[in-house]
Amino acid sequence: MSQPIEITFAPLDIMEMDKAEGRVAVCVTPDGKLDQAARRANRLTRGAVARLIESKSFEKAKSGQIKTLAWPAGLAAEALDIVVLPNRPTAIEARKAGAALGKLKDRAALTLYAGSRPRAEELAMGLALRCYSFDAHKTDAEADAPGAVTLRASRPDDVAAAAAPLLSVAEGVAMTRDLVSEPANVLTTTEFADRLAAMRDLGLEVEVLEETELEKLGMGMLLSVGHGSDSPSKVVVMQWKGGAKDAAPLALVGKGVVFDTGGISLKPAGGMEDMTMDMGGAGVVAGVMRALALRKAPANVVGLVGLVENMPSGRATRPGDVVTSMKGDTVEIINTDAEGRLVLGDVMWYAQERFAPAGMIDLATLTGAIIIGLGHENAGVFSNDDTLCNGFLKSAAAESEGAWRMPLGEAYDKMLKSAIADMKNVGGRPAGSITAAQFLQRFVKEGCPWIHLDIAGVASVKSETDFAPKGATGWGVMALNRLVQDHFEDG
Image 1 (cartoon, rainbow, N blue to C red):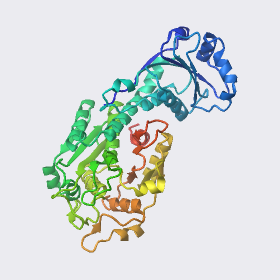
Image 2: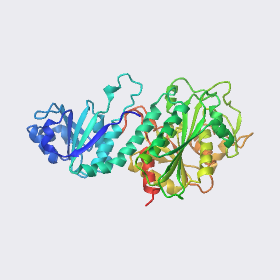
Image 3: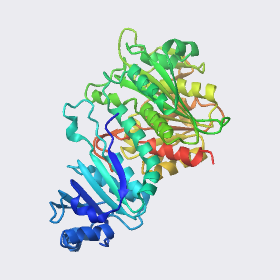
């Protein structure tokens, strides 16, 4: 995995502030009130903090912003960062402030004086999220190393205990970002499966189903996607059994197309390099499972990912071919670039047949249409169950991960009618993300609460966000972890 930031929790000890090297950060409120550490910094700098707060540049300062004094007199540090934060910040306000510190350059060492301020653990979470960088293939990776942070608090042991589960989630986010960022010549289906199998060390039960077993199970849709590739198709099953022995698990299902050329329905060359991220749904499932295992979640959750590569060759599935799903339905392939739904449909059916889950959520970078509808701010949410859906939307909002519910309806089904099979795999350009969800719904059993998350617009973005540099975001790990925490954990 990418090199994580090292965060140490230590006593407040403001009398040693003048000796701290690297960067020193203190907190002030938006109306300019200084806490104990900020007052100490002001004395050491001979009133420089007070002068900054009284200046016009501070008048419009908002929560989460940072004002910096370079090479402050009276301190050994190279910079004194003034973090604007209310005395009682919300979790997201504190997290954004931590992330703002994480964005700063020259961060080889940072000492953050949080004092007795509430939500100090969220400051640590924000730092961990934003200090991420993917350097696996850079020859000078040390230049972007995240460095070390000392967070000084009045009760450091309490802050460390509160931060531990949050930092576990941040590690899950980092794993997702790593997977989404990897090039396809590195993250083959076999390498992906191996990385998931390595999580057995965390207490996960991990099984890798190979092509021969998938053929016996009848996963004709999934296997058809990988026919043109030399990389073997696989399904990986990860079980976390932290809840009651007889409690049905929540099932998370991810699309893991490690590279998508479009197959015979070849994509345009421009931008095809971005299709290394078409396994984003599987990446999120992996990150969630890692987070749950690291924080020892008292819940039963099973994560299943279908790993394939969609390539053109003499063996590749053709437009016009008919394939048979594990469920037994037949599908006419109109467009081989609508492959993700074929992978998901078989894995979803397998998940229900084997585990009879309490609920099922699938994730996929499924359609360009969802980007046209929602841009890069929100994932598309489709569901057959208001209770599960509303729970997820609430969890996503609490974690500041954009999500917007989209419609389902029988009227869209006629767009999937085939003259020669039970259904087509595409319904045309109108309502493209909805017809994709309607296709998936055909593989949801009666009575199973289900959510489909189309994350094509949020899995990887071209500009930085509050909590991530440009590129892979890890969207969904935090929201799904919170959903499990709030609705599926024992007690």
